[in-house]
Image (tube, rainbow, N blue to C red; front, top):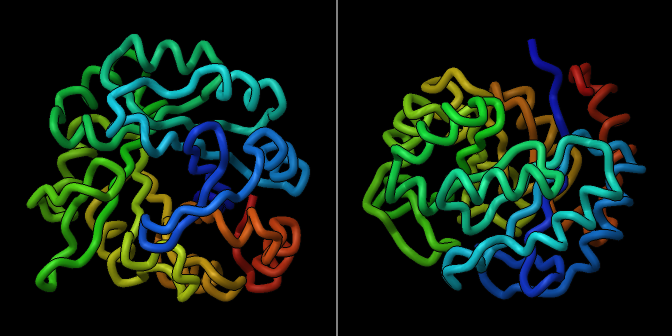
Length: 250
């Protein structure tokens, strides 16, 4: 069984880390380079960097910032935002990313997942899925949560895996920033359908939420942002707590 991972997430806008609730009301959460260094020191297993306005602004990820962060850390580093082609991925990998996260463009052009997976290896390709409940169905959203696609999350997760995704980063927009816990039922359902690792995102508010996630689902990792950025939970303390719950943690 894969040991569980704790992954802080840096949502980036205009070169700064931001955090909101349900993908809106974004507030400054600090300098991304300093946060990245802090998280590695605290024992984070990986780091995710998402340039959250790159797609809607029709631009590439801010490469100089990726380079600065990658020069300061030695843990696996996933970068997403504005990725549309092989050259975009190659640029990010050359800037220091270990993996890339694709979302909006992959939904519109699923074949890009296959292209990137064939070129760089599926272990390098993370498909990020943003979803919320509409009429009792979990629907996929793109463009930073602005656009509803009409695609059910179950269908898209399976399509993404078949296309070559090596990992799925699943975010419940309804849970994002609420600190009320992860979308356990949804995550459990997706884990039961796909055979690639699933990273849970959205809703972490206390240590018990992490233990509940790992005890009730097959998710291999938990991603969180605000509770780490604002010092509400320390990563080292969280890992110590999870070990007391007999969670196999890295």
